[in-house]
Image (cartoon, rainbow, N blue to C red; front, side):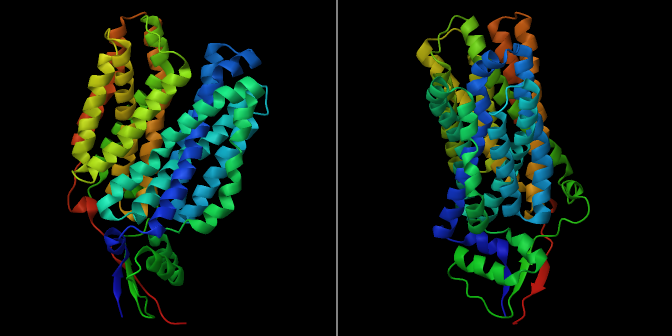
Length: 445
């Protein structure tokens, strides 16, 4: 008889084809997710012209998806701990694929907004689930790298939307890029077949044969016996959100929420107003396509580089440094610099906002126990979405006040300072990482 700690087995496993498969599927899902989120911004000028809507109404149409993302991150992150992770991921993929495509079939701004809200449920819900999936199955030594490499697909999806969008919109109209977003729905059967269920979920459900099969693929050195017992982190019973405030995690949970809020505020403030602010200052950034590519290229570098650093140093202090870099680089965007330097600063801004957000997801995934990991990431992401919703409105109000350029960028940089402080206050102790053992005896049939 063997007593197996499934999380220790996952921590110490060597990277193999099993891990590569999970990474590939999760990256593909996030690329699709990133495309769906970015596509509205790419097509917005054409949508405004086609539907004859004002800038104010167009802003509401875009923000409808952000509202959906907030609710999706909270509720579809939580439901995964109850129905299983692959099913939750499949539901999210169906939501954002089907309803983004449906938005391309309407010419009514209100129906469009409704479709984008429903798509947003899936866009927001899939993020905490794939992070939890990647965190659970990644070897400890390369965990942050795996999560951030997977999540860099978000920026790849944004670049894909920019690259495909221009040609498709010119040739076939704005609806074409939305209809293209429906294609990933065909992946659902393959995802359900290929993605392994959460090990903790399998222990709770007493699906031991399935668990043994996963463990043998994850760690080929494991040899199952008829009387193996398995230890997993404790159950998420009752109200799952309450678990986020137990065992000494309460204060740090609030700090995570603040960090997520501030980082997403910066991401959407920049994506909404950077081009406008630079144009008003006399800079020529070229096409919006070039801007999107530079920002997202920086995001990929920041995510992968941040993950690499986080696997070699404590992820908390890597994040503190990245948020500090955001404060400096965004502030410097408000000053007159050569265009080449401006592009470098925009790249740094992408690395230290979008890239940092991805590393923050990885940190949250490592902080919470497996039993409530999806719930913890989902609530942090959901609270953060309120920052995404507020950012275009707050910075837009400041722009309307005709403040000096540097003051606008200082306003965007202040959240980076607050996030730096919040992350530095996250506490790690025995209680925050304590494990409750739940044993399930596997008897021979």
